[in-house]
Amino acid sequence: MKRICVFCGSNSGANPAYAEAAVRLGRLLAGRGQTLVYGGGNVGLMGILADAALEAGGQVIGVIPESMLKWEVGHPELTELRVVASMHERKATMAELSDAFIALPGGIGTLEELFEIWTWGQLGLHAKPLGFLDVAGYYERLHAFLDHMAGEGFVKPRHRRMTAVHHDPDTLLALLDSYQPPETIRVIDRETA
Image (cartoon, rainbow, N blue to C red; front, side, top):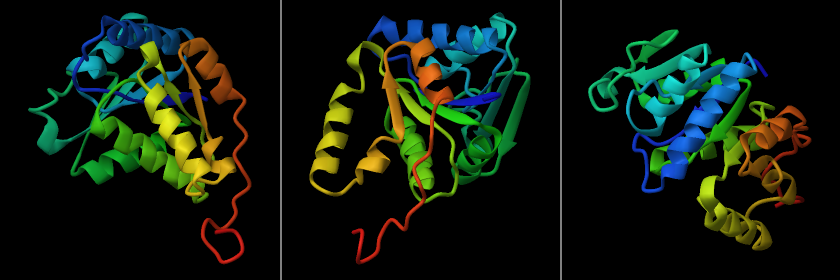
């Protein structure tokens, strides 16, 4: 894994542990020689993550829609900042550039980005690993609901197992390193639905 895409909040959140985790992850990626790919902003966890990676000597590629340069304040000191036309192009570009995906705490956009990548993996459009860095239990309730979805028959067990979850970034990266994608099977047909 040479390039790791991290989805995270454009806010810092209420718990200081979120910012601490962003710093730790940014430094860790830089120390491992892995390029950070992220949303290109200079605010919230996005800015904290990018700054930590840069300060540790890492490479950072940001991808931001032109319309959001003012909102998320495009980071001026990145290795590379790609300005794209739309959110769709942003997600597609980040997916194309990256070998794996991690969600730090964030809001609706963070979840939307990771769930889209997860869906693409379920459909066999890519075989890249994805995981949640579960800082201070931030994602515990979400994973309980995902287990409920699987229990109710809306998520196949093989697809539920596609995501790694851990509170420690070193361990999470090790889980992503060892990822084996499920066999691609038609998601919906009369025999497997």
